[in-house]
Length: 134
Length: 149
Image 1 (cartoon, one colour):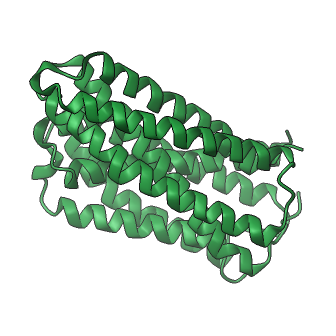
Image 2 (image 1 turned 90 degrees about the vertical axis):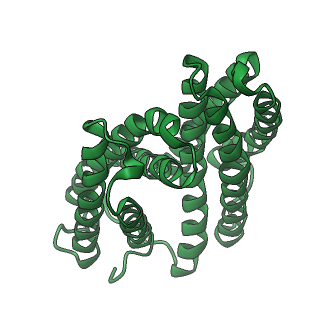
Image 3 (image 1 turned 60 degrees about the vertical axis):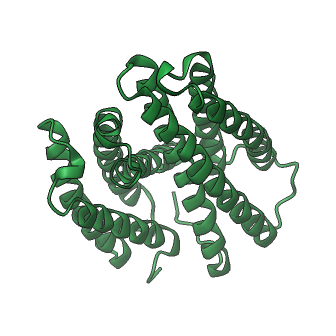
């Protein structure tokens, strides 16, 4: 496999981890499992969201530098970074609650934060596939 | 490496396929996490077993359908022969994955009927099936991305 193929596989796998964390947060908040679900899903949701988020950024930037025709200042790449920051800011609040042992269901505006994370992630995927402006 | 562009008409089917696949893997991760926790602790085991079953039924199966419909849609656009390595690998994993998912859902339903006794051996079977599916889909992700052959 070429470096490009490795980077692409790792970038996509990281995106799957990120969405897995998002789904885990979603089930935790909307699935009705109470404290048992909070203990079972909180730590994996936090780890998947953080590792996936870091992976998509690192391998995404590396890909942009590696591939001729893409530049870091392309509109769709700047949009992706902005969406990543929005998703990370919302996810960071939920993650802080998990780290402090707080029940995520009891965090103020947890559902709003989940909605922001979800919309930003869907927009990121649309941006990555449609690449507006390319 | 020079950027290659696919036709715009492929973007929407690809989005449907990838979004379905991401939700599918995410739901399987939730099944592994909840069933794993149900197997470890007695407290709340019935709640977690029920959650794993509902996630299989309302998360894994619907997202599988979305993933597969997107796959058929993008395959019809790309017009790639089915015998290309990465396509045939994807179909094999998808077909086998559906069978394992249905088995896991039935076994998880049986496990929920054990109530406070915990999921027991059926819970372990669901945990292993979901973990195997995650590994298989990781191979599929590699094949779809690197496109060997």
